[in-house]
Image (tube, rainbow, N blue to C red):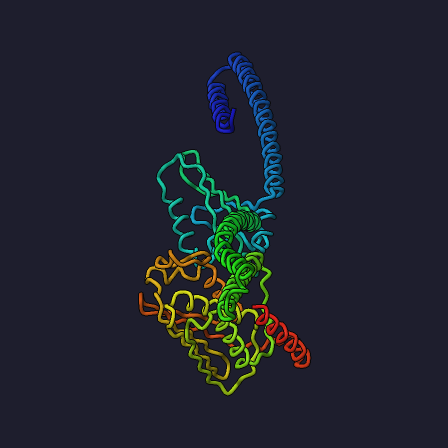
Length: 471
């Protein structure tokens, strides 16, 4: 029984008592006695009904109190769970205005809970993502599909006075009994660290793939190197063996000039093999990242003169070499070993691919901070299709099939030029010739004093002299 029912019952009793009272004024004594008895009966019945109504109300009040206590307990449990969630948890209205926030949300956004309430959640989005976030929220609010429950996406948020973070959002709909959207529940999780870890793992996987690819490439390179060098060594070794055998059996019959011809043939083959070995050694050092750069003071004019002497001796005067040197600065810092590799390989190609009797032009000039080397030949030239690939290991131009070679020389030249911080260009035309231009900056990285360099230079000159004598 509710309060309205009780009020109605009391009103009915009041009416009944009023009727009995009006009748009592019209009756006689005997009738009055009967009327009073009837009144007392009605009053008794009314009191009984009131008692029952009171008991019902007390029971209902007790049940209502229990329900209220249960709601308070449930609310407390909800608040405890709400606060103890490890992830940030927010409740907003359909406009995205924060109405509730737990401690994790306060920590994540670096704003106290009291200050979070009443703020737009989208205000924490990065400026570049603000419009997209607003459109997403509008889409959630305006969707007329009642069955949508949750939505998930990632967004970059900027906590108060902190660096931006990547947050995974999970949004759930809050609906009333009519199914109308009345609010949004937001679960926010900082995934910045996991994203960084994922990026590191991807980087590690990529690095491993590259390492495996490099390992495969190195294995293929070794295989090709072994095959190619074994083939390339056969020709000079056969020439050495043949000349040595002829000298052994017929030198007492031959003139000195004919003997010298075979000796020069042996020397030329030895120089060719030495160059092959130098190229292979340099390539292997580069592949193992052991190729160093050690610039020291070098007399460029003397260096070039000595190099030309070796080249002419190796060539056997089959070609003319026109040398020009224009420089006021003869002393500069270079890595002599790398510079020798650069010029030796360029000259080797010019001599190899030029007809006997032709001229090779070699010019050296310097500016205040760099040296410029230019080697021009009038040989077979390089096809246009091969120009972009000539500095790749083992690449040989399509018009060199009948000329022996490893295809390593120009790749070694490029690596040596790069180590110097220089640049190399080439101009070429079929059956006209090729011109290679190398620009090498002077290095300021002097390793050792000039006295030490002088001593090393003396040893180097002796070593070079020894090389020349051996050749």
